[in-house]
Image (cartoon, rainbow, N blue to C red; front, top):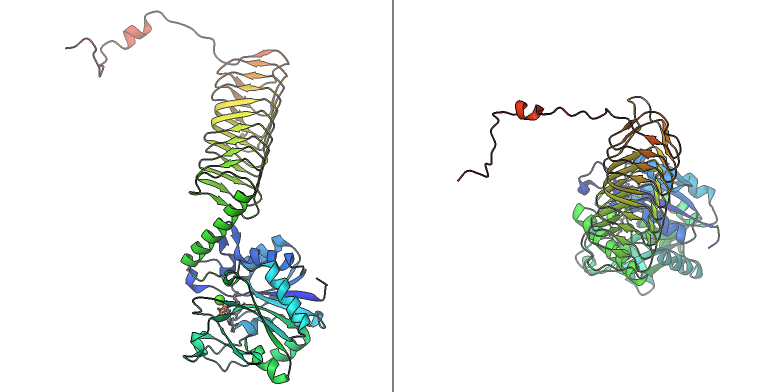
Length: 469
Ligand code: UD1
Ligand code: CA
């Protein structure tokens, strides 16, 4: 697609029926705002120059769109209709005179790049001033109806303005259009609010174009899915389910094994290797890459992280981290941001790792916290170890050398270094460097007092008396 094309995304509406403090276009489907899907489809269709019309909670909407990069904004303070919204982008349109503009709603997450592209092809080949993307739907209620005569589309009538017979029409306006920009600019000046909703309807451009003697076309999408939007929470749930199934179908095609789909929510951008098994309750949020032959779940959450091949990730959570191949995690582990878990590591139950590197072959089997640490290869953590990384003011790092053996219930008070192949006695609170191959032991020496307990506990009452009848 050539660069004579640009797009206006309408994203100023409130979405009252969602009963949300968020603007509607930011309502999420599988962890991604609806308008994010729209931007993706527009870009995939080859349209680079995008202007979003924002209004209701524009700051929030723009903050999100900024994360997608290279989008400019036009502001619509009062929502006076879709035509009015496009008027707000007049400067953008003037900058692109001579070309074509796609106008698309920010709340139609199932719109596809193919539909956009095919509609443009038709728009150009027919020399249309306006090409409306339409769909045949079973239930047209709420949508603008496409009125046709022998010559083609004659107008679009909104539900609230339609006659009884027009209400019977099942071809509806998707809210997506291609316009010749020069024609659109002229028509924007002619829109009025003489309709049931007293709004400037963008749909009136059809009628206006025909009056000018220009061509108007309708591109009927091959599936009515492209028009799906959400006006309520229930709609949103249904869209999520539909998107979820679409993602699952893709994963099946790619060789992912999912014995039961219960509670499996996978972001559309997730990549999962063949022969990996996803068990119930697995949630893969945005930006997740998982290798082959892994077993993920049950009941696991992974976000913005990469896992290698043959990783077992059982009932655990992982954020903003990298886990290399042949690693076993869980059950009940928390891998917090900025961690790198190298190959052949085993991390067992009730272990938290944060902002740390864990070297190859290291074992952290139970009840341990490793934070702000650089851990070498083949280190063994006993049960219940803690890197004491926070002194109440500063975070400090621990460095643990290759092959070190950290006895059970050790505290490593950071900043502290444990040398290669060093040994730490169980129950130690280590505050000073432990030398390579040395022993660090930091606890009171044991003393025994004969007969102490017998005196101290004399007369105590026991709940269970094995000798009593
Ligand atoms: C519009 C179409 C209707 C079509 C339907 C498809 C008009 C007059 N009607 O109706 O034919 O079937 O979309 O969904 O265009 N918006 C603004 N500013 C406004 C009004 C709306 O930015 O002043 C944005 C909304 O955020 C939304 C989009 O435009 O993304 C569509 O608005 P909406 O109110 O849903 O339009 P409909 O009445 O559904
Ligand atoms: Ca709508």
